[in-house]
Image 1 (cartoon, one colour):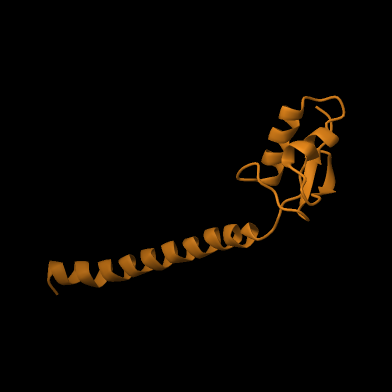
Image 2 (cartoon, rainbow, N blue to C red):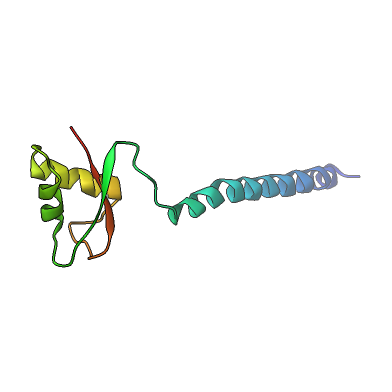
Length: 101
């Protein structure tokens, strides 16, 4: 057998095994991330869950639950904890409002 023939004979299985291994790694690393997208995480900080009432703004929700804190800070915390894209919220949505600090 020629040198090129031996390289092909040995190289092709190594190449296929590498491709299979990479595919397997991709399946196991992307599946959990995709599954978690549909699951809402419960905040790790103490929080109160409130339901947004019709006509209520994020500012109003924050002000009602600020308990002596700066309303701007509470709004920012609500946005982060709930993963909001902006300050628009729909009536009936349940939000976590962080308590304290």
